[in-house]
Image (tube, rainbow, N blue to C red; front, top):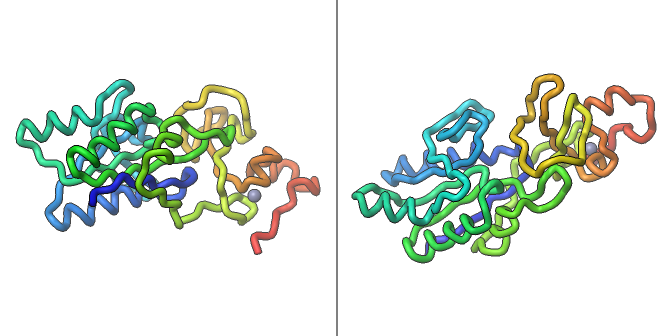
Length: 216
Ligand SMILES: [Zn+2]
């Protein structure tokens, strides 16, 4: 049976790498997929991973009907054996419903990859809809680590290395930002709650509040 699977994880946990690996494994078996992404770090129409791999993708713009895109492609004689969606948290809830329809009406597997919660620990609407509709939710096992060595479970937004908790839900940035730009850092819940990034931990190294926490 085809499935809608949501692979969830923090930033920097290898989601895009796994998305590319799933695509590679299936194309090696002669299958052809349609890859959607939204706001990838490599630019529009690309799916890239931090390990340096990149492939062509369809930019899933706001308002785009993903189900209609598949139907149109197939009716023109194009092939689609499965669907991969990266950065799925940025999709609108209605687009997640379209992904479910691709599974149910077109009998295709859909593998969606995304972050569950934003920098304020709130669910992205797209991720919420995925959790509601997916046949399976898989938590990625390639775990990112907080600067303290503990499992990083939360995404922090930073400006100049300092954690911020106000602002729009979606501001595209990366874990390797330039000084003064919006960036992101994955933290354990303890350091997310205390707003202690790696930069502020270094700056306040004598404060007992920011001593490294044993990961044992
Ligand atoms: Zn930590």
